[in-house]
Image (tube, helix red, strand yellow):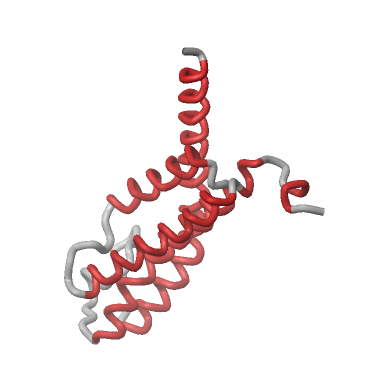
Length: 158
């Protein structure tokens, strides 16, 4: 039985070229952001990452990359957002109680060590990164599919 027969909808798993290009593009983007963060550029924790993730999900919906690859790729973004800055702080020894190497949190608390901050970032990155990916992925992918259908409908009617 082919994978296409198992798929309930082409939007669940997506088309082959877009399905493989999406995770590769996201990994490339995260590598670029990682190098930038490691050398001191302000590519770390900001609200622009949420806008970027929404843009990735909309683009995936337009391209037909599939909901599963979209959520998986956005989980990588969410995990990176929470876990990478504490990892750099841990490895470089430049960790401070708050600031650039802390993961984003709702409350003002922090950990007492770089290792604690890293483990907290990984834990939150796994849990909240997945929630972030599902919510942003579903909304963005649905918007992308709607845009794609509307553009196909208007171009076909001419």
